[in-house]
Image (cartoon, rainbow, N blue to C red):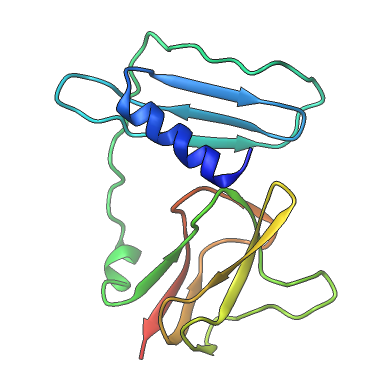
Length: 162
């Protein structure tokens, strides 16, 4: 399943009365949960897990219990970075700070970067996607550990723009 198919599935869940969609094959598992009440739109939640040893056919079944999500409470660190730019993950996958294990990191805290510079790669279904900076500036914080799984729209870097 490619990124566009995942996006189409999210749009489908958000526009219909389907509460949950789970797709699993030998390489990955995707679980999309949406909330559908009258006058509210679905808010998909995507989870990706590591391959499981069992192979099961795709399962699509509605969940009779509604998903209740509480908004995250702002922390002290959120206000510290109010005039900074946050680079977020455009896809689900595994975050890597290096192009390969024997190479140096793309960027480190304190590095000056330019717009379009590669910050990291995210592996999604055996494809390595370079994540580039939207702004020029200085890396203030790296929010994800190397070789960690990341979610769609998860913050990766905090940048102080020039």
